[in-house]
Length: 126
Image (cartoon, rainbow, N blue to C red; front, side):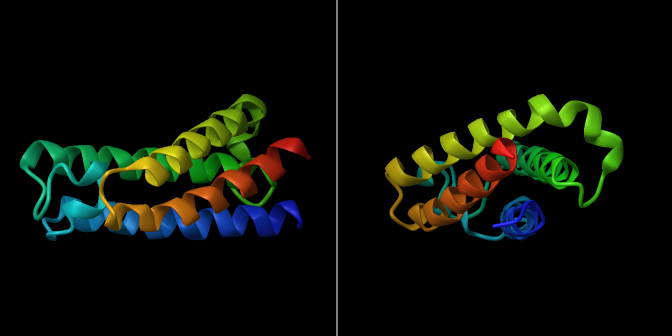
C-alpha cells in the first residue's frame, strides 16, 4: 500500500474520531462510547474540554502523517522523522485501550485504531 493511500486512510479515520469528539464536546449523550464509559450520557464540562483537546491532538497527529507521506503540511517535515513514531505509539496505545475497555460500545473504536496503527507504521517504515 502506498504512503499516500495510508495517509489518506489514517486521516479519514482521524476525521471520524475528531467528529465524534466534537459531538461529545457539544454535549451529545455519547459518553458511554468513550473514556471506558466512565461518563455515560453527556460529558461534564471538564470532559468536554478534554474532548476539544483530543480533537486538537488528533488533528496534529494526522498532520504529521500527511506531512511524512508528502501529501500535505510540508512545513512539518522537519519533525516527522520523530513525530511519525509518536503517532505509531499513540495508535498502538489507542488500539490496546480500545480493545480492553470495560465499555462494550467503546470497543467499536478498536478496529479503527488498529487500522491507524497499521497505516502509520507502514508510513514510518518507508
